[in-house]
Length: 196
Image 1 (tube, helix red, strand yellow):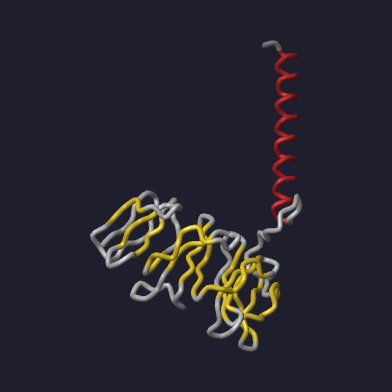
Image 2 (cartoon, one colour):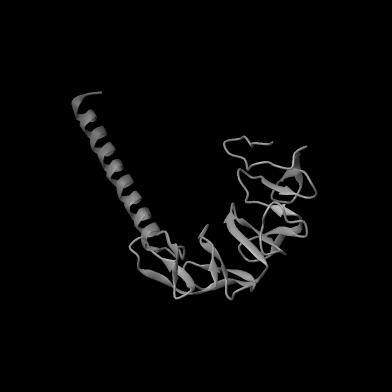
């Protein structure tokens, strides 16, 4: 390659580098300011209590969702579980504070991998015996029927649940993938799950 060809090649390379950086800046800005039709706030929101009611603040302490709920969970995948009244059912709000899944569940957990645990009992604890837990999608539709005594968030495509005494792992259709001989198991992380 002679000097002139080398110079043209380097100019083209610089041009594509500049174009690439500009594309990254445009995409990055649309994620930050929510343009391009995105309605999911990228700024984290944190639960906060005021006058006995719960809402959400940003990292600067500015109230973003007015404290109006009896209880709240954290935001995950753009939605947060909320309890409108003490001892009332749970539903879900979006990052604008709008109810997107009406309050109808006795217990509700954060979304993980597009699904959230909902239960017939007020807690999703391991030791409840009369609980019935299943999974909903982000529209509030039950996608895995409430057949489990305890259920936990999906991790790496599997969720640990307890039908009777022993923990099992199910996929997103509710099919049992792994059975254990143990009552206690932890969620998958990096391809492994701790089972006692």
